Length: 155
Image 1 (spheres, rainbow, N blue to C red):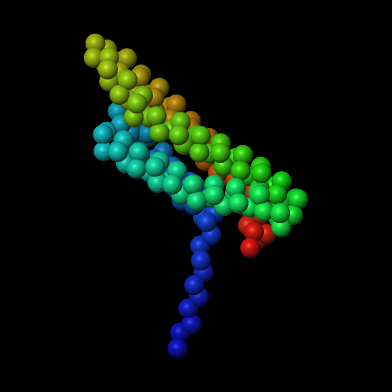
Image 2: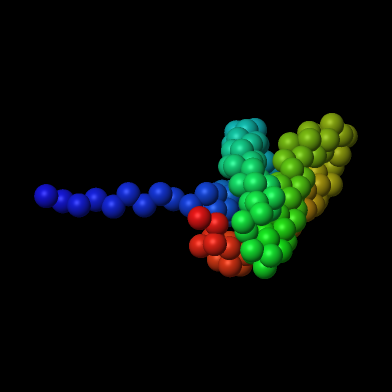
């Protein structure tokens, strides 16, 4: 007989999923070539951001529950509170990133632009949103430090 171990994935693995998703967005051809973002890519980006917010919502509920749990030690509670602040920061940054389609639409509303200006507008847009991606990834790295500190203490 074979024995199987069913290791339940940690809810905190959702941070790794978010990190992977935003790394994939950063590697889209529009982001690497600074070209116009195609409608299919915008739909994909929107779906990814909504999925990420949904996954992070599960963690939000857990953090709120644990921060208010009197059986959690003071030190762990302080770490959870800091993690909760970073978690909110992450959600805010993802929400900021989700404005990419609005910004892209606003760029397209100006039909009388020269090709050079249009290229610059796409470059500027992609550059701003790549920066937000970098902030998202950096925030996840900071959150993961707290995950490593509290994960085993939340049973």
